[in-house]
Length: 255
Ligand code: NDP
Image (cartoon, rainbow, N blue to C red):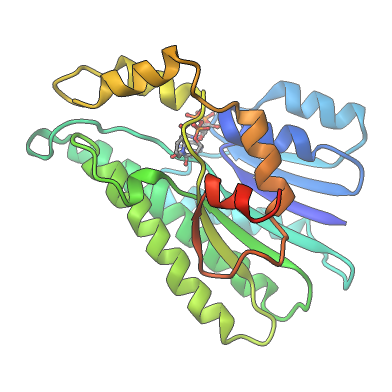
């Protein structure tokens, strides 16, 4: 049995990942604030166990509740594999640092950074004694290494997530049965997050027109294609634990 824990499954990349994973042999744990009824229906029709949790991952308590609930449903044996995909994320607040909404920034950092930290920590501790393939994938962004005006919080949360990945990889490499952990910048994908970017006022995000141009030129990737690439490489030995990679590097790895 393969076990997959996916955050932010209601739409975008998370929905595409979950959709592809609904197949016999998999048990899925999905979370977002709003349940995706279509995914639940599809899984029920195919008899694939899909446990869908509605939690707000801007709250650490709910993140802890979620991951502990998940592990109540899992009994791992020698032939199993398990993966955690920290995908849920938000872009806002988008504004120059001088006028940032602090309350929103706090929510953002909880969702984009603290929740992956909490989920990864519990995942590692619950699986540490098991000699099976174990993977954590953190969905990062090119914004982790390219600064964009107006995205001080987003760039910082994703840069933090990348560094968390590197440190955890280092720690895990010293373990007897390590969890492989890596971060991926998935490219520019046509999801609600991109719609949000295109709707931002120019004075808050001066790069907006470039994103509109990419969209108009049809240069945005499809969530389904990105999800396919991710899943083909999730358990691949080609990916080194602690690494931070881009979708283009993922393609080079042999997909
Ligand atoms: P979407 O906005 O389309 O989807 C975000 C997902 O996260 C939704 O399922 C949403 O569900 C969930 N989510 C948001 N807030 C919360 C919350 N408080 N608690 C629980 N779940 C929440 O985004 P994408 O699919 O585009 O993004 C997925 C990841 O990819 C993000 O980490 C993003 O930073 C990253 N990324 C995306 C890029 C792109 O071009 N799209 C580029 C680079 C990185 P709900 O609202 O139901 O809670």
